[in-house]
Figure: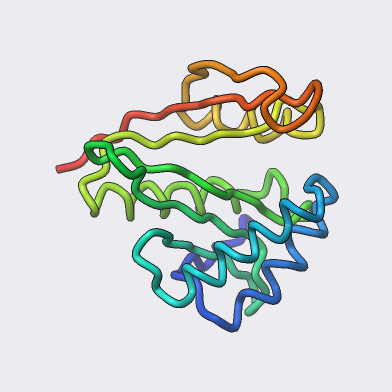
Amino acid sequence: METKWNVRPIQTSDVKMIRALVQETGVFRESEVDVAVELADSASKRDDDYQALVACHNDEVVGYSCFGPTPGTDRTFDLYWMVVSSYTHRKGVGTALLASTEERIRHLSGRLLVAETSSRPEYEPARNFYKRHGFRYEGRIPYFYADHDDKMFYVKTLRYG
């Protein structure tokens, strides 16, 4: 039986759990964890630049997405963060969270969603997730994050109406 994940807007009380969630994955550097938490905190205060959703199970945050409009563009949005607990991988949390994120962006008349990620091997599951969910690979900037750590771009066209 597949669990139904409760996806809802972030609340201030979720921020501590998001830090633990991002750290628990073992993928992110401490500086990246700090950025994820900073954006979660900003979104929880309803900052106009950032919005965030959380996926919960029994009041525990098991997934987090943060997104917002890309300045200077016509309805393009950036997916700043998308992370799910390692013990819920391949159980539908990411799919539910992404579907809710896309639904919210469509509601805001978003037409394009851009996800940026690392080329490091531990990010391969994230890159595969994006491809499985209709994102197309559009390019990379070599050595962007660090030596031998490129920034990779994935883009999805959203239909709204």
